[in-house]
Image 1 (tube, one colour):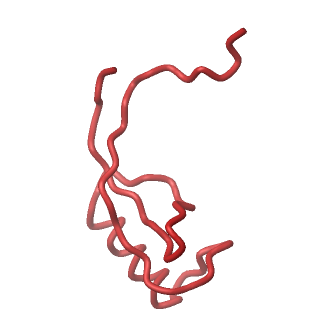
Image 2 (cartoon, rainbow, N blue to C red):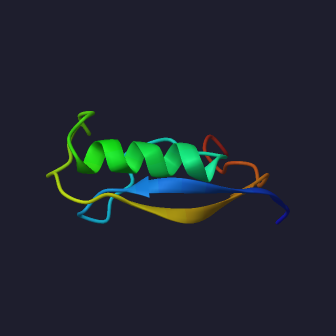
Image 3 (cartoon, rainbow, N blue to C red):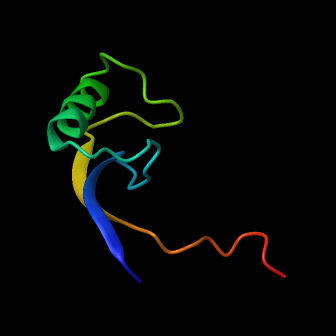
Length: 67
């Protein structure tokens, strides 16, 4: 498995990731702050402090649709 790039994801207070990943830490951190302070609605989230954690993107093909 080949790793393409590192990125960031915003994690809701319940531990679920409900947003697309970010390539830029600053963008993820800003959105997490906006979701935490309810400046922007995080759909389906119970509310509370959102955090940012690293994520690795890879180029492994999806197994979906294979017989």
